[in-house]
Image (tube, rainbow, N blue to C red):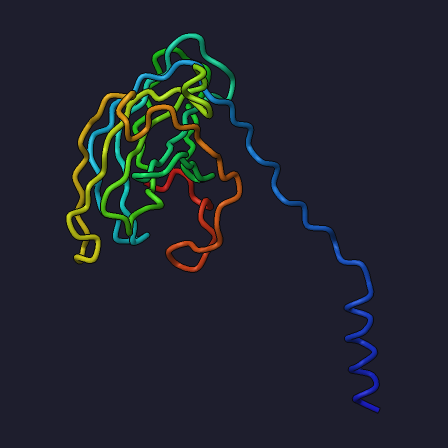
Length: 190
């Protein structure tokens, strides 16, 4: 009898509607039409076991509500650049001159050489996916060292490493975060 009652209770719990859990609304994001930026260095973050690109971005006129910038990665011999969901950063508000220091996790931490560019919304036919504002080459002499180290060599935005390459966005973060959680859950951790 106890088994029948337990089975009935379990069945009721499964069949009865439960309160709906609403997913949080995504925060709006618009590519800023004007961004000035400088890339400073690449450091290793122990907590996420990732290489992090550090720099500073300044919002210039014209400004937009919920404006921000994006980072693109360029692998040698690739015909496209890529950008992941967690590599976007927003300015606090539509304020000309707002300065936004940033640290952005680099997906390609296991690679030894790759390009990085900060993007704004202004585009030319040669810059599909975003206007390259500041670019560089990240070089890890040995990605297997512990902790890994890397250098950042600043390059012109028309360097062959990124020139004439469109950027394909990856809006959904891949499910392989450093601690098993999905990437992108903390876009401003660094």
